[in-house]
Image 1 (cartoon, helix red, strand yellow):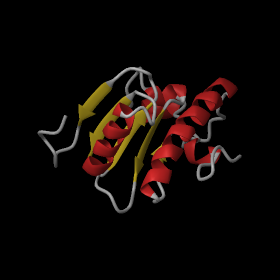
Image 2 (tube, one colour):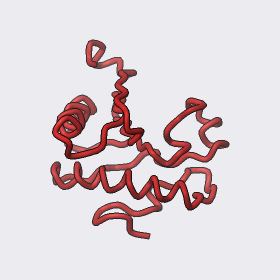
Image 3 (cartoon, one colour):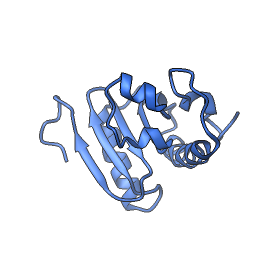
Length: 133
């Protein structure tokens, strides 16, 4: 199922094969629409590492108990020609400009987390950019 010009539902499926509930799919559609805005700006593919997570999958990988991934409101991703820090800064600017929804932006080694929770949350678990955020 195509969600946007460049994103398909399969990219956001739980990696354990758990069927995505319909209410979760609605959140994934909104998330994909926001990511599409960024993808159009970057003119580069966004590789989704993790989207929706079933409760079992989230637990198995040590995810937070209140993870936005459980709601289908989050994605962890990378973009080939950009560092995670660069992507985080682009997301921050686009959020501040009202181009994409306010939410969580997390910096990690090699990938970024973005979620559409509706309130501002920032964190840095990158060992490369210790003084970021």
